[in-house]
Amino acid sequence: MDISFGATGAGPAWCSAEPSTVSSSPVAIREVFDAIPFAIAVIDTDLRCIELSGRMAEKIGRSREMCLGRQISDVVPQIATELERRLLGVLAGETIDDSTLRDGPECAAFCRGEVHSFAAVRNESGVVSGVLWAAHGDGPRVLVGKSEPGMERWRTLMAEDLPMNQQIIAEMLESVGYQVITVADGASAVDLVRREPFDLILMDIEMPLMGGLEATRAIRALGAAGAVPIVAMTANQGPEQLAACRAAGMDAYICKPVDGQDLISAIRRWLKTSYKVVPERRSEQANPIDLGVLEHIQVHFGSVRTRRFLQEIHTRLEYVLLQLTAGTDSGQLANELHSLVSMGGHLGLRDLSERSRAFMVALRKQANNVGAVREEFRSAAIRALAALQQQEQ
Image (cartoon, rainbow, N blue to C red; front, side, top):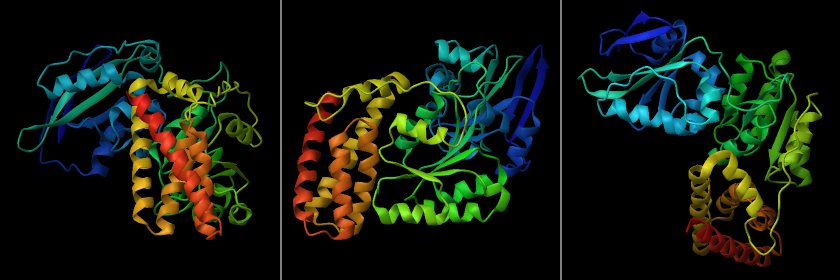
């Protein structure tokens, strides 16, 4: 793919984005992008981010690995409406003039005087296969997230495999000024620590490819690069699990579902910085869903993404109940319950979270009372499903 630029005033004017015989391997394209003095991303026809420059990753406030393959609305939610409108216009054959993105205060904060340009990317057959997006101008780059005036932004690496947990925990940290880089498995965490400095690591225990314990041991083996505080995030509060965390080299742990106050308190033990108190959660005992938690999520993520979160846990909960009825292997069922512990807690389904944790532990320990615990979980799950259906109406 051959991308040509011509200068007009403060920013570039797009001359062409046409197919070429030039090498278009990911490494070659990335090197070209990083050599261009403004932020660039390539978005495919499904509005997923398929490549971006280092400057764009810095502007967004996430690692390249976190952005690639994800919907652009999840990568930059604060400008999603304006950005998607322009991307869809280019894909439909429209010519989009260079402009700023102005949809609301968060959009203005992200762009801050920059000009955004869009051009169609065509494959070797001349068919539009994506959109090239560039941000340029004299405005300063800003990272996603909020911070107090003068606050230093600590770099926190979070290793967590569930996308919903990633977003909710990241919002907890970003809302009080931390910069969060997220990966979905332990192997990616080890690789990033080897290449980039971090002030603290949040490490989930059960992840694909490489779990949190193995990743922690690998990070500690890096020597000076791995001498960074590591805080475990675990749904299993048993003494054996906590001992294993300590033995692997972890410094502390917090229990899932992660509570915002507990999370910030744990991090402050290792990072000396000021912080804003996370709003207290309001509970409504008659409702299986804590509506105060749900309201907090909706304020920060918007109604569309909140609805997606609810649909995600609804689908997973129905699947777990189906597996329970079918007599699925206890090990597999325990793994499914592990996801419900954190997802339920983060969405305000506290009773479901607690019953899921109790059932998971009983299955793994083959406890004598597993039958009674199973029925308690089933009852909590049915109540949660009814509440979720009511929220989705």
